[in-house]
Length: 414
Ligand code: HEM
Image (tube, rainbow, N blue to C red; front, side):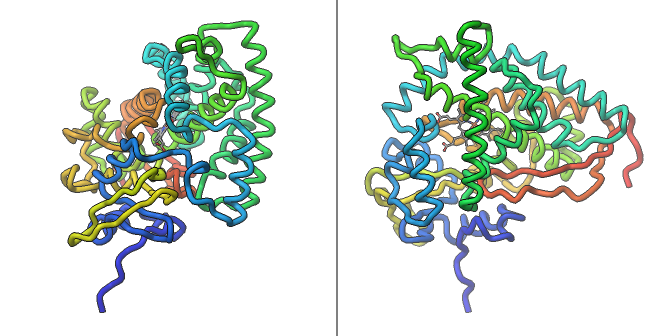
């Protein structure tokens, strides 16, 4: 009997343990699938890229997707109707307006200015690791660096980092497809704590403007247009959450990929010229954001296998599997191989594409480049002390913990 065509089920534990073999089967056997009455899943690079870039698709799921009636969806809609929507969920012209204003504050110069601070933070962590001979990569380096960077960028206090980390974890957990009513309750409680905290910082800053991003956002304008108070809060919450919950996983996934591909680790260690391309290849190989979603505003057709046409209609959810697109052999030769010198690594879609292309991409790359390259250059000896464990997440892929033994001098590998 012929085996059934694969179906993308993000809740399947097997998929969560190893999404890439499912993606390979999907691309080969079911590159465009209708998994549900109103859900279409795209696994190929070109379909994903065209969808993310297409003006006929909306990111405003609440406004344009066929309303779902399960309790979690109902609750999400209710909550979102009450607050300002984030830039991530807006379509033009609202998106264009907001993006223009925030781009005036989020400049390459403001990011590049952070380089010495990031290096100093990383060096402090590595000094400590060198002294003890061990580190837990996620808790010691991968989380604190992006957290301190976003706090520094906004000139926010960092003494409450544990509390803020818990809040932002609760908020991102609620974005997962596995979220339950309980998860949403926790996220709402976290937002109820985070917002007054941020309002207090913003009000203080308003009377005391500085050189930081928050001050820039307070005065940022585009042709006389400014962010209103609600938009500013929503944007800062997004920056905080995006700033913590993604880059941490880039640093973790990148380090794990290098430890599993020692030849590439050695190559990068000895060739600083690879720094930029290496980060793009690591984003391609195992990026932190595995999929995103769009809603078509008109009838759209995708080519399936053997001349089959799969249509997506207004109201449908179209899932674009970024993690699968990044391993598509049509675009990336030998896609399951980590190849830091890959000539077209920068074509990856780990930051999506089109108008919602990640605003923090250069910041995330700079942080990960400094963190990972400094770690591998400081320590000739790096060994995993235990099996790495992945967090139980679907949209965001990353490690819980990665225990390492480190030493500045090389040792015999066991
Ligand atoms: C490796 C780290 C990161 C990854 C993989 C990542 C990934 C993404 C992706 C895939 C999107 C687009 C989602 C979609 O189109 O549906 C996005 C949007 C965004 N990201 Fe990131 N991100 C990262 C780090 C950051 C950081 C550090 C910041 C800010 C400090 C940030 C801020 C944003 C913002 C504001 C948007 C919304 C842009 C818009 O809608 O116009 N991201 N990110």
